[in-house]
Length: 304
Image (tube, rainbow, N blue to C red; front, side, top):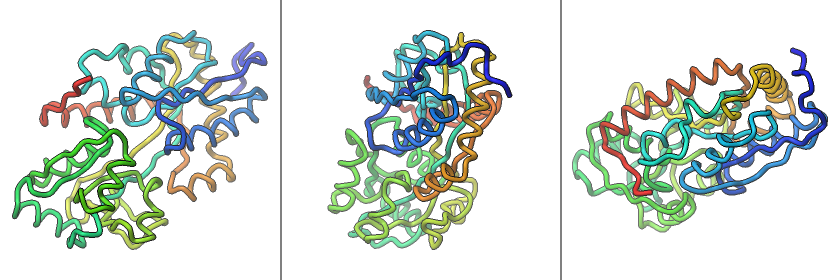
């Protein structure tokens, strides 16, 4: 597909990452930015704009000039926050235009080394035997780790006690230190701890096994239908011309299909994708519907 006339006109592009540097979204965005800059022939810079579960950075892009030069690298939170936050300053389904789905990342079910459970079935049995006694951590209310655990509880009928933290790091530290029992987290972030034995992984949350930890079965083997995938997509301000969005999408697809990009991401347990705007819109709608139903049924609300 030919580039839109006059775009990018020699001007740099900005990819806004609504999370701190060093996380999986940031790493994926930087790899994609490197390839996209080479393809478009202009610098592509990363701006980390963390806060409020990703809403600060997303709101910035929603209000940016709709010319394709400021884009959002969103995560699954773009499909959940409007269900959780009372006063979200933008509507992700109306104020942002889908450009391309770029990656998916599996989650993993973890337990601390002090926990005797060795499988998903063990966890379900233990939680049923002692309602509320088992604790699970997350990076905060409404985060993907919280929602994954809540989905697990709803599908199994068990009750576990949620312990929200200010970030994944403190939760993982307490899991390792024996002050927390269970946690869902992105495989990319914890694979080294799993291999070192400081935490124990019970299962992956994708339908199939993962090549980084092929010995782990899917949660769905013990809980049919359970699936949680963290994902990243690129969005533009809603009024961005369709020709610019299509041009960006085509360039991103080509970048994400490059062998070097796919290999670098695969080493991090990230599947490089690339999609049309319509495919990302369909994906976003399905994710919003799935997590919206969970949020309503569990009455999850943020205090922010």
